[in-house]
Length: 254
Image: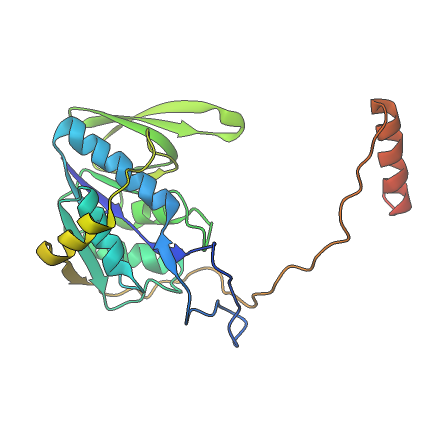
């Protein structure tokens, strides 16, 4: 079984973020990046399946800042092959364009599962897995919390609102948007990553045509305006309800 895991570098939110002069992007000059949390879970779930079934795991990423380090880290964790998609920048691409670039490359590969993070912190639209399935013309399940493989089929747990979990059965190949692996992503020491950097190589593949419509455009980034603070309402349930009604009426809500 062959598993492909698209991964992505995202801004490290521990750092202070600034808007650039255009007002349509972040100032990336001194920005630090890290592996998208949900992609890390997708990689972990793929590595668990590798241990259970003997599958091969390929990590793939669009060319962007520090992406080589992310790919070498994936290899240090256990990915068998690491691929960088060149000719496009993963920074600033819409989910549509990123999915098309990845699908152009993945479509020429042999695979049973494509597992990517359900969303990324710098777009949060949750569309990449869906769009990959569209461009690859394969079945899709998203918000996945576990994958169990038996033969050429998989049992997939999908989480819905309110904590409800449903199980789906699917036949390979398919695309999955992973919300959480069955266990926390494994830690890999920096020394091991450096060792992999000396011994492993990144395969580079051209993205091809990514001329697709994104469906939306960014018009402005801005810092949220601070509010006036919260008002705590005490008393009995009846007192609280009466106070809420009074507040709503004072704001013209009837």
